[in-house]
Image (cartoon, rainbow, N blue to C red; front, side, top):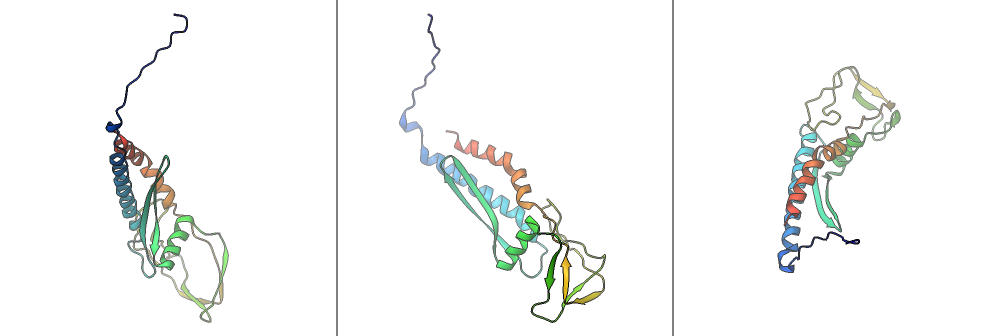
Length: 169
């Protein structure tokens, strides 16, 4: 008994592993996840006026990876605005009047952003103060709201759990 090795085996009958059924269950879970993330991101633009994005999602299975991608779509200006808010912009960059002789905006301490960092909500916001006319200003930049990072972090465990359950035979 010098070279004894414990070996456990369980024969599998090919008919028992239903790859198509497992694949379908996983794809259904990916669709559910895409819809759930889309609903959360829609909250970030609920009170926006003017250019406003819609959200869309794509799903896929690639080798060992199950993928859900959700992002802004629809109105290109609205989608760009959402990306600027999600990722932030550089600080202190110049803005010059292009299509009019002056930039016209309210300036003062009464500005209140509609959205907050890592928060899936959109509030009324405010912009009070006197109207100002300038040919050029230095924009302070936009603080990144980090919605993409936050949604991935919040949903990762549930996503993994649901996919594991869907993949069980």
